[in-house]
Amino acid sequence: MQVDEDAVGDVVKRLRRAEGQIRGVIGMLEDGRDCAEVVTQLAAVSRALDRAGFKIIASGLEQCVSGSAGEDRKANLEQMEKLFLSLA
Image (cartoon, rainbow, N blue to C red; front, side, top):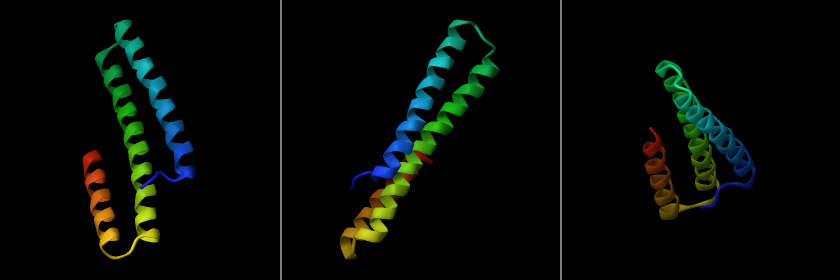
Protein backbone atom coordinates (compact mmCIF):
# COMPACT_ATOMS: atom_id res chain seq x y z
CA MET A 1 0.00 0.00 0.00
CA GLN A 2 1.10 3.51 -0.77
CA VAL A 3 0.39 6.59 1.31
CA ASP A 4 -2.29 8.71 -0.33
CA GLU A 5 -0.77 11.75 -2.06
CA ASP A 6 -3.05 14.12 -0.15
CA ALA A 7 -1.89 12.61 3.15
CA VAL A 8 1.80 12.85 2.22
CA GLY A 9 1.80 16.66 2.31
CA ASP A 10 0.10 16.73 5.69
CA VAL A 11 2.43 14.09 7.14
CA VAL A 12 5.55 15.86 5.84
CA LYS A 13 4.32 19.13 7.36
CA ARG A 14 3.78 17.43 10.73
CA LEU A 15 7.20 15.77 10.59
CA ARG A 16 8.94 19.04 9.75
CA ARG A 17 7.18 20.66 12.70
CA ALA A 18 8.32 17.79 14.94
CA GLU A 19 11.84 18.18 13.57
CA GLY A 20 11.81 21.82 14.69
CA GLN A 21 10.44 20.83 18.08
CA ILE A 22 13.24 18.29 18.52
CA ARG A 23 15.83 20.96 17.71
CA GLY A 24 14.13 23.13 20.33
CA VAL A 25 14.31 20.37 22.93
CA ILE A 26 18.01 19.87 22.20
CA GLY A 27 18.54 23.60 22.69
CA MET A 28 16.61 23.50 25.95
CA LEU A 29 18.82 20.70 27.23
CA GLU A 30 21.99 22.49 26.16
CA ASP A 31 20.77 25.65 27.90
CA GLY A 32 20.11 23.75 31.12
CA ARG A 33 16.35 24.40 31.13
CA ASP A 34 14.08 22.94 33.78
CA CYS A 35 13.39 19.22 33.31
CA ALA A 36 9.61 19.72 33.52
CA GLU A 37 9.75 22.13 30.57
CA VAL A 38 11.90 19.69 28.58
CA VAL A 39 9.56 16.77 29.28
CA THR A 40 6.55 18.88 28.30
CA GLN A 41 8.16 19.63 24.95
CA LEU A 42 9.15 15.99 24.47
CA ALA A 43 5.52 15.01 25.04
CA ALA A 44 4.48 17.51 22.36
CA VAL A 45 6.99 16.00 19.91
CA SER A 46 5.72 12.53 20.71
CA ARG A 47 2.13 13.57 20.01
CA ALA A 48 3.17 15.17 16.72
CA LEU A 49 4.92 11.98 15.62
CA ASP A 50 1.93 9.88 16.67
CA ARG A 51 -0.42 12.09 14.65
CA ALA A 52 1.81 11.68 11.60
CA GLY A 53 1.77 7.91 12.04
CA PHE A 54 -2.00 7.80 12.53
CA LYS A 55 -2.48 9.89 9.39
CA ILE A 56 -0.46 7.34 7.41
CA ILE A 57 -2.45 4.46 8.90
CA ALA A 58 -5.75 6.21 8.19
CA SER A 59 -4.68 6.62 4.57
CA GLY A 60 -3.87 2.91 4.39
CA LEU A 61 -7.19 1.94 5.97
CA GLU A 62 -9.06 4.04 3.46
CA GLN A 63 -7.27 2.20 0.64
CA CYS A 64 -8.02 -1.17 2.27
CA VAL A 65 -11.72 -0.45 2.56
CA SER A 66 -12.16 0.98 -0.90
CA GLY A 67 -9.73 -0.99 -3.03
CA SER A 68 -9.45 -4.55 -1.78
CA ALA A 69 -11.69 -7.57 -1.74
CA GLY A 70 -11.70 -10.92 0.03
CA GLU A 71 -8.43 -12.25 1.41
CA ASP A 72 -6.40 -9.25 0.23
CA ARG A 73 -8.68 -6.91 2.15
CA LYS A 74 -8.46 -9.06 5.28
CA ALA A 75 -4.64 -9.23 5.07
CA ASN A 76 -4.42 -5.47 4.53
CA LEU A 77 -6.70 -4.75 7.47
CA GLU A 78 -4.63 -7.06 9.68
CA GLN A 79 -1.48 -5.23 8.58
CA MET A 80 -3.10 -1.87 9.38
CA GLU A 81 -4.16 -3.16 12.80
CA LYS A 82 -0.57 -4.15 13.57
CA LEU A 83 0.69 -0.75 12.48
CA PHE A 84 -1.96 1.01 14.55
CA LEU A 85 -1.07 -1.02 17.63
CA SER A 86 2.61 -0.26 17.13
CA LEU A 87 1.77 3.41 17.78
CA ALA A 88 -0.59 2.76 20.67
